[in-house]
Image 1 (tube, one colour):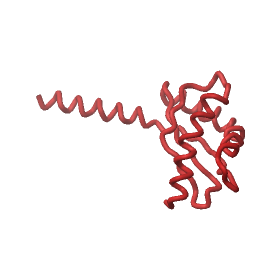
Image 2 (cartoon, rainbow, N blue to C red):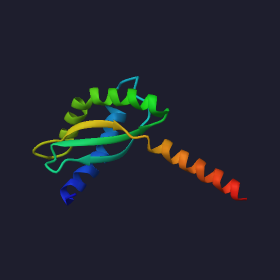
Image 3 (cartoon, rainbow, N blue to C red):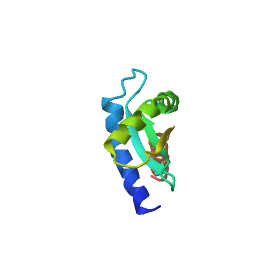
Length: 115
């Protein structure tokens, strides 16, 4: 990953949550947390990974809402980032928190068994 990609990813990670929170007014949208951004080498596409409170079912519905609003979010991003081309955004649900909770639960059970 180039320095430019890292910089663009960090800008996207900083600005997109602000846009979602303040500008996207959709009642179906839950509390979304952006976990990471992965942009292509030519910076024409970016995948935004997020997690949401409510599990995988809620994540899928929020993914649909965000992908539906991706054109608007990309337009707002273009207004805030001075780039020749703004990356086309795709949102994907990343169940990171649930995996962390499962791992912690397994570790806790392992500790209890050894004691």
